[in-house]
Length: 474
Image 1: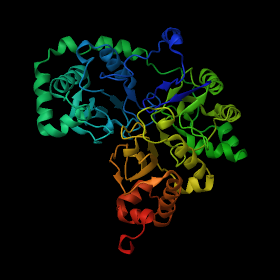
Image 2: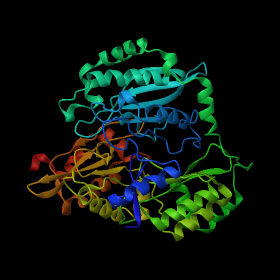
Image 3: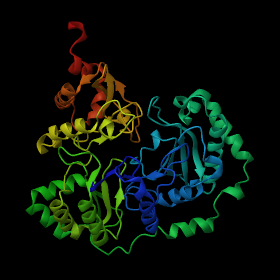
Image 4: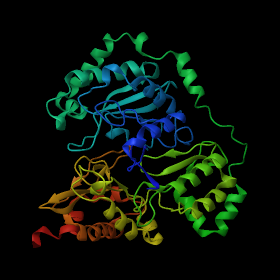
């Protein structure tokens, strides 16, 4: 059909291949070291991380090394190929959590102690879906050299005790909730029995893997780019794009450039084959041949020379990829919904398209600032609606599509699960309902306060009244 779809697992989906063509597709992917292994089933799925890894100005060290260690360990692991349920791991090395580690089965946060030693803070039992939970910390500091043996201990406890009689209660989050503090004790006891030398990776092997993630040969540039500043003064659209779609790089003279896949009225995460060619060419020419998929269904070029950023913008603009909305209200996460998914109760894409059009006005978008809107077409929560500042859940009500609104969710380092506000809205009502919330926020916020901050300060009741009216009058 000429397009692909990027997911919140930092993967790409092709929805229309013929079965007869699948072996050839897999063979061509294998030629460039890509695969579809463990993208489904009750196994350890692909490990995700911060899309800015190795480039972020605020990271302790490059977490990709440890993601690769986990990938090699978990791929076709004979002991963990038939777990009670699917299992997802995420790794972050920055104080700002861009990998949503607290809503994963295992979330690993690289931390540095006062003595300078680095290790992992281990979060277990997060997840969304039917019973959403924020993960709990079961170990505040795990020396890096023991990572695999500790992961093995967690997986063994889960594999032995996780429920297999009810798939709705089979995720590790249920086991963690039901066992409480005993879960950490069971993991520690299992870990003590493991022969660490047979599981943990020798330092020489870690060094070998780390060599594959050596930084590119960055040019020596001043922190301030005169060509960049001149282009920003001359082109207001470019200036806004730089302000919204770029992030600081750890090397002076470089930036991280985000490519939004959320055009006004578009399908979140979709990109055409022609646009893929453009993005790939830009990565090859301007970003050391590197491009990444983000957790929020966008792309990023991690290493762009500031002097060349305007050239990148112009090429993206010509391809219809220069939308300046990263982190704003129109940067919506949405699952494929009923248009593509047999599990869905309602369509997600049309709601996302209409909301993105509603919030595409630059003045309104800038006034609203950071606003995370996330939409799922069913309780499985592939659109992460539980951790949206505004979450929208599609439900079936007597054969008609309705949408429940959740408020107060957060997938970042201050993670929280959103609260259902009340009855659902029809497809014709839900857009206006979200707009009312946005307008109320603008009228009620304090200086510099994001939507999520205002919600936490004011509580749910005034927002519910905006949606449903004063209960005393009903």
